[in-house]
Image 1 (cartoon, helix red, strand yellow):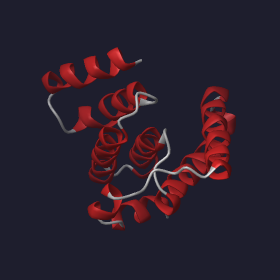
Image 2: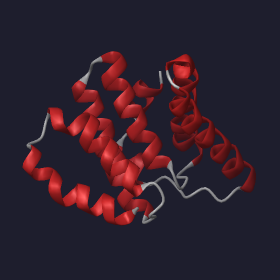
Image 3: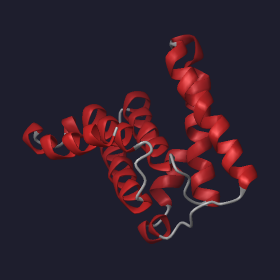
Length: 143
């Protein structure tokens, strides 16, 4: 459902999402983002929790606006859409939106993860490897 929601959201809407400043929403997002990280590290026993937290943080971004790690969460969703649904076109679309979102955020937080996730998991299926050096170097230098 969340993947469809991202695909059906016009680019203009994604580009005009406001930055979230509400402390309660920021706290919820931070909690879910941390839970997402721990679910990933915990392994396949917690795969469903990983999927749930990934979709929830992306859903929060679409409903409320940009959080510091919104672009990173979107790249996670792109990777999931490739691994679970096997749809490379959807994954590429989501990853490209995530890179634009990261650029718009002008935040170093999550930049390295956003660049690595998009290039290592998805873009190597559709782009020449020679094109990766500059974005991966930029991601590496950011953190």
